[in-house]
Amino acid sequence: MASHIFTNEENNERLEYTLRVKEKNEAAKLLGARRNACVVTYGCQQNEADSERIAGMLEEMGYTLVKSEADADIIIVNTCAVRDHAEKRALSITGGYKHFKEKNRDLIIGIGGCMVSKSDMSEKIKHSYPYVDFVFGTEKIFDLPKIICGVMEKGKRMFVSNTGDATVPEGLPVHRESGYKAWVSIMYGCNNFCTYCIVPYVRGRERSRRPEEIVREVRELVADGYKEITLLGQNVNSYGKDLDEKCDFATLLRRISAVEGDYIIRFMSSHPKDASKELIDVMAEEKHIAKQFHLPLQSGSDTLLRAMNRRYDMAQYLSLIDYMRQKMPNIAISTDIIVGFPGETEADFEQTLDAVKKVGYDMLFTFIYSKRTGTPAAVMENQIDEKTKGERLSRLLKVQESIAEAKNREYIGKTVRVLCEGASKTNSEKLTGRTEGNKIVLFDGDASLEGKFINVKISDAAAFALYGDVE
Ligand code: 5AD
Ligand code: SF4
Picture 1 (cartoon, rainbow, N blue to C red):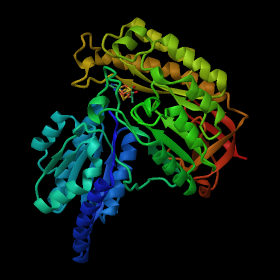
Picture 2 (picture 1 turned 90 degrees about the vertical axis):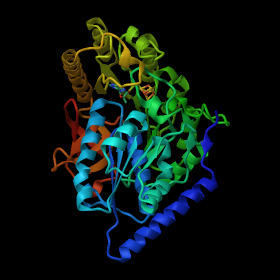
Picture 3 (picture 1 turned 45 degrees about the horizontal axis):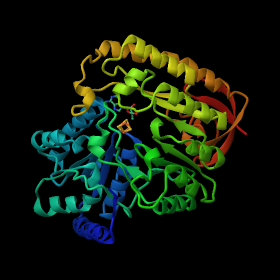
Picture 4 (picture 1 turned 60 degrees about the vertical axis):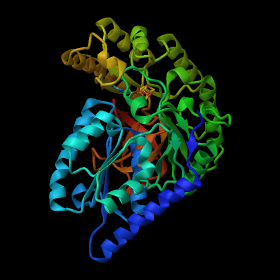
């Protein structure tokens, strides 16, 4: 099915509601009221990107963005459902908002994102969190002005679920957190149904933005001085399959790279079953594309990969890695690994350890399997006990730590280009930044370097960071 790209009428309707909310807010401000908004984000980069759109729309409605919920007159929580832990945190933080509502009776509270896109959770909020004014699904972000207007005018709670109509919003305002790093969503949804994953159930089917819209956004970002642009999608390698015009991800990358300027492009995530040689060729050829690849493996056991419905085996995965390294010998490779998937035997887990050693990843994102109701894996037999999961995770982290340290030590004595991100959060005396391979570098320097590319000569390295001096 072709995606439904936002029409002018839909944008006009959104703007009408935006103005209606804005008028009310301006009138309240004239009477001395405050109109502050706070967006709280959980989960992945896609959620961060969505929150920047939510914040953009709130600004358009006359709100001033603030960092603390305590100062807000509207709070929007953008939730995640990938793991149980993220859901528990979102629910507990929402529980705490009851007190804010008692203090500020004008306060509006809304919850969106993946967690409430599951019908059971939406119901739970309806019944157990009566002070939450509205809930909206991941596909309904663009309806926010209409929803907020409804809550204000009718004084009623609103529950707006996903309807699976595969809309691709265009033209929404964006309030970007950074002046030099930007997210650009290129597609929404996922069609893969890995058996552990809730995402396809809460974000709907894959739908791509049109290439000209994406190139236009990148061109504007580069003109505005953005230095690092990360293209986002649950599986960027299926980009374009739903478009009428022929444009796959490799072609999109070529078109984006034709934009002139001083910037780098990153992308995530890639599914190994769809990563093409052509994509790797484009990366090798185009100077703007960072030589960094995040290729989620999930498990090193073919048996588990089948049970996870990943649709590749270790041999195929390793041949992709070989091709990448042949074309780009210094490429930095990272991955996602799940430990404790149902039925994971000690032998399966050892195959994961072997795979991690064989590939030699620069970075690992590790996850303990979390049962997600509604997914096939949740009802599989042989669920692994928490203790075994924890032990396996520690063993995996230990193996990876020495690999990462050895990889990072190879940089000692070399000069790398780094995008400076300002003061380090872990060591306030140092500046921090990231290499093209997405490695963290700590160095001395002036705060004015933030947002600039600089050359740093690496003098020391640990498993999770490089240390150096500005050249
Ligand atoms: N349990 C643990 N990890 C999960 N992921 C997705 N679903 C689950 C789950 N149920 C991990 C995968 C994915 C990453 C974004 O989150 O490794 O690549
Ligand atoms: Fe989840 Fe698999 Fe889709 Fe990634 S590709 S979002 S892991 S179903």
